[in-house]
Every structure is written in structure tokens, then in C-alpha cells.
Amino acid sequence: MESTTIELQEKPPREFELNEQTNLTEFLSYLQTDFSDNIPENVLHSHTPEIKVQDYKVRKAWWTKLTCSIDLMIEQGLIADVDTLERANDFFNLYTSEEFTKQRLVSTEDINRANAMINKILCKSEYPVPTRVLVQSAA
Image (cartoon, rainbow, N blue to C red; front, side, top):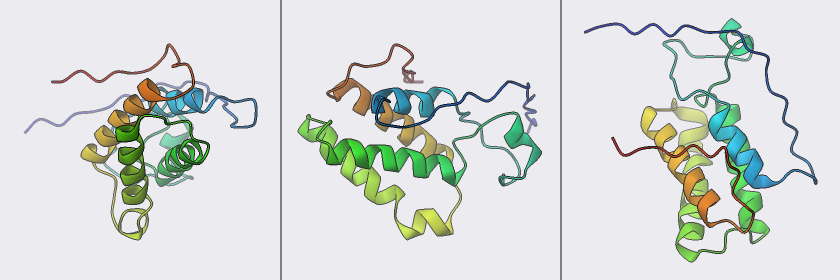
């Protein structure tokens, strides 16, 4: 079995502040495109050197940002499509459960589900869809 090495390239962290002027779809797009899908070999903590170079979806803080954004969109009625709303509620419940938040590590399947959920919400939201949306190909 071959070992894969991920080279970390330094890049300045992109600042993104969620406030009243920020469109939630822009924030979801930021969460999807500016954070790595890669899962490092070691558990990352806020003091881990890799965090200074690359942001990862594997970190629980990323999941908190995502679930809070989805919750806001649900509460504000920004997800008009009934099927998408049901899936968003199910996603929120799963990824805010104690089993996920306190007891297990993030998997590739979790990250794939998050990307798919973001895509579905962005395509069905009341806001205009940002042009930077990452669409996963069916491979």
C-alpha cells in the first residue's frame, strides 16, 4: 500500500466574517471551497502547526460553522424547497448529535455528505448562488 504525502503550501488565511451584511450562501461557499477535504494522519488541534498553513473540514470547529449556518438558513426560511429543507434538518440533527460532536472523528464520508448538502442548499436557496460553488463529480 502506497503512502500519500500531502505537501502543505503556505497561503495567507482568508478572512471571512459572518455578519448582517454577509450572504449566508457566500459563507457556505467559503466553507466548502476554502477548507481542505483531506484528512491528515494526526488529529489536528488549534495549536497544531498545520492549522497555520491549511484549514481543514475535518476540524469540529468547521462543522460548528456549517451546522450554525444551515440552522440560520432554516430559521430564516431561506431554504424553500421542501425536500432540501427536510434533508437540511436531518443533516443538522446528525451533525449536532452528541455521538458526532463528542465521540467520533470526522470521516471522508462525512465530508462528502457535507459537500453534497452544501451543493443542494446552494442550488435551492432563496439567495443567488455564488459563482465559486464546488460541484463534486460523480466518480
